[in-house]
Length: 97
Image (cartoon, rainbow, N blue to C red; front, side):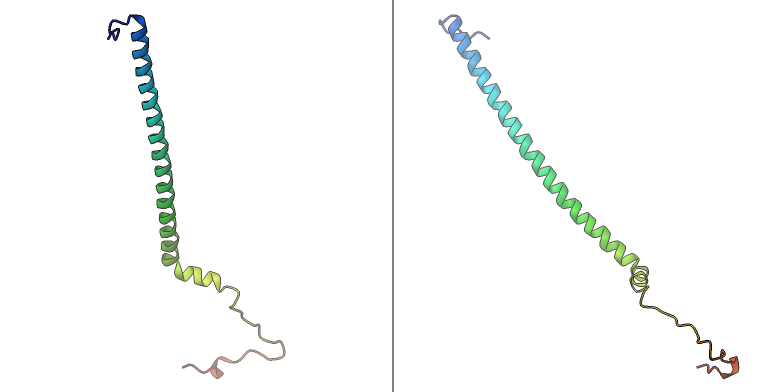
């Protein structure tokens, strides 16, 4: 395209500068949109990842509830050994319900 408009080379240079200005404006707009989309994608991904992690942790807690409870209470169970002064009880003296 020739934008001379009876101005010769000067008009063509002016038109090229206008086109370059529009091109740089479009480049800036594209860069800005990409920047906004990047941060939107990042933040929604982090939010979704957090929700999925909470769901996984609570699902594991529900699935392994008995095992987790027994693991948490492992120190509260204790068995005392019979004292050496008393002999073990005979089987016929132990009462069965």
